[in-house]
Image (cartoon, rainbow, N blue to C red; front, side, top):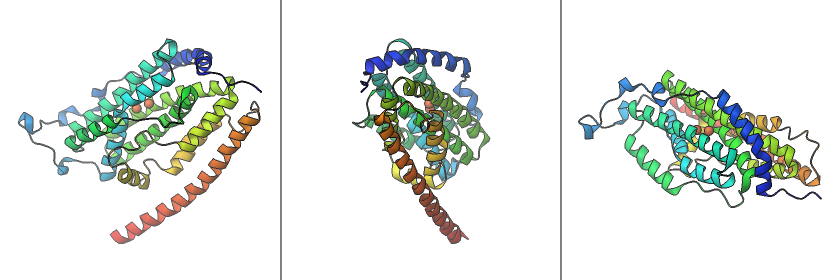
Length: 313
Ligand SMILES: [Fe+2]
Ligand SMILES: [Fe+2]
């Protein structure tokens, strides 16, 4: 039976793929500045600077749009935690280290831009936004115990980057403001490039260590949770976002899990041993069940929305 590759071996084998994908990424990515996406002439001083403090009437965003914006921004804000986990599971040396730095710098731009937009346009309460940020970052994000090593990490971030892309795009649509929509499209385009980077690394890992990678992917798919889990008001806000299709189970299955699994050719690979086969079967069973859950979830949501519409009517 083939022996598992160690973390050091995996990192070394994957490093040329990382280097090639950094080159590809840098040739594709667009350099942009936060200030190009923020309507600064709408800005006014707050009370401490002789102006007026925030009050709810100043916001043009609907409740769903506000909640989705805050959730997405706090998720971006927690970058120090992600940076820590990623640099522990990758490496700070060579191409891996270069990517960790570059990715961190790009992600930081997302939080800067969204916060500038929200505070400048008075779309949300800046005081509670700041106190939520303090709570969320002080707590930090901690990977569960079963999550360790480069394969778990690249598999997780592939799905997570794609999930944030979907959620930023959907948030842009519910804002009903062309400026917000344009800003979130810009950010979502970055997330898509990040997803492609991690998807390519995971794809190469499948070729280098098929069984090990299959086991990581199955584990990550079965336990996937958004990185914002546990932030202030997570449950209440999550329910609202699911109800309005910012990020729901249908999107998770159809727009995130399945397209990526298809590109990795998971269900047609012929290079697994019995171990990889077992893990693939486990994944297939899980996806079947998720497919049934999605149908149940959509029926339930349709009933709730119909009831609410009847009440309003
Ligand atoms: Fe981001
Ligand atoms: Fe990203």
